[in-house]
Image (tube, rainbow, N blue to C red; front, top):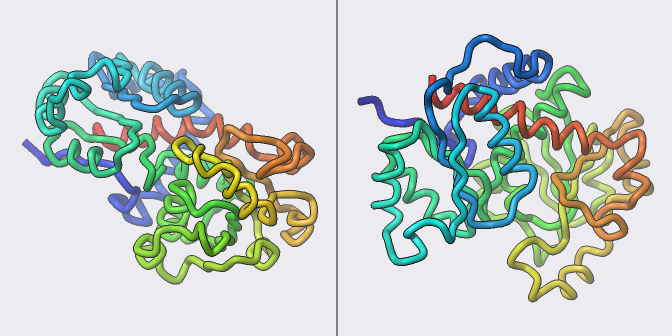
Amino acid sequence: MAEPRHFITGEELTGDELRALVGRAEQLRSTGSSRTALPLRGRSVALIFEKPSTRTRVSLEVGVSQLGGHPVVLRGDELQLTRGESVRDTAMVLSRYVALIAVRSGDHEAVVELAEFSSAPVINALTPLHHPCQALADLLTLQQRFGMVKGLRLAYVGDGNNVCNSLMLLGAAAGVQVAVATPPELRPDEAIVARAGSSVELGDDPLAAAAGAHALYTDVWVSMGDEGDAAKRRKLLAPYQLNSELLTAARDDAIVLHCLPAHPGEEITEDLLYGDRSAVWDQAENRLHAQKALLELLVA
């Protein structure tokens, strides 16, 4: 039996594969669910959600269904993992039932271990360290708006979190120049910055990052698990708000991106989130199309 192909950080794909996946996602967006080929027909996919989810859960559940499969949605407290069963045993059992496993977890190493012992492909649907499915949708949104991804400049401002990590890695692979501006205290993971290489610019000046950018991107200031440091984070991140002043520094045709959920008045102003330059709602929809393309690739 061939070794399963996993999607844990996004680095599992070559640049050519990544651009082809984005192209396929664009096709799927235009054709919707009317296509005749159903690669998941008669197959089930386990969707494990240890954390609350709107876009990830719904887009994966709908995507599996549109590809002909049956989504088996499992909350973390519904698995024997909560009663001491090992990740290894869980992987070895689940992968005998299903064609794929997608998992949203608060423990990145547990997802890595799940993939190590699963005979079915494992998709990282979010961990504290990476959010590669989101980055696929982001690249698709850039492709839609600009007709290409290679050679674009994307400015990310705010917290150097999992979304930032995945943007750097997948952006680099796709040929996007990613300029990151964060407070020094909230810089992204240094090892990931090194792996992304010269495609990443790292600094603490949001206006410098935004200069000449095709897209401005931000995320929430207080993510799940960060509530205890909320006041400190808001103070550190206040100069990094995505607002009209920052947008003025970008290109005239620049778009606004946010992975959601948003808190207008904090990390982004309401006029940008809902304004004419916002691609946020296309970006959210693109979770569905990008993940369908990924599911197709992994079960091929």
